Image (cartoon, rainbow, N blue to C red; front, side, top):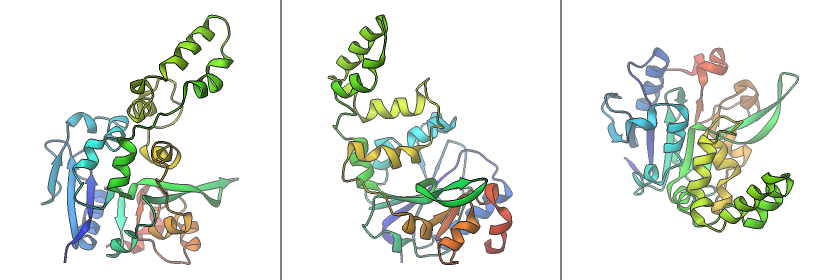
Length: 270
């Protein structure tokens, strides 16, 4: 029986699929038979018989553009009739049919927990969570991405940025502070665009960091899963460490399985 509350979006950008990607598709076919599955691909890329949802090919041209798609209301509006959306990139694996158990209403976003290392060894979790295999509440994501909440007040901009400038640059700081009175220079769309494309950016433009660190700024009720919930849902880095933290149990799925510890995951592949 199809679960009408959750959809799966398989996001992929090239063809032909590699052996590992075909294995990922095989897991999806085996375990996602009780929910609607969609292929989100550029034109010319087919993923079996899944219904394709079309977006402009530019969204698949590079990492930044693809992450921008997942930070766009346009993306989530395609899935408005579902309560939840699972993102499934083709370096993921799923191991069980109980996706519905995680659609509990307790949180708006869940993904594999990030792992903190000391001296090259995993020691604890540092946050939630990786987006390659992630579940998000569609309505909550739309509330974030269509929010009218300002990123910061003019005073906050001046205190954080403008006041530290010297000479003529202080004048630019005043102009920058003044620009924050205008919503188009201070809303979530402005923030997302600079989050992905800012020339001063020193981080990889992955959308998961936005959901973890910034989403609640624009929708204060936006909630993340706990690390205990996240490790039951998915692993990415240090799967053996995560396995132990999860009571020596497999999660629902994993991401980047052949990049971080293929030897750990091979016994669990179909």
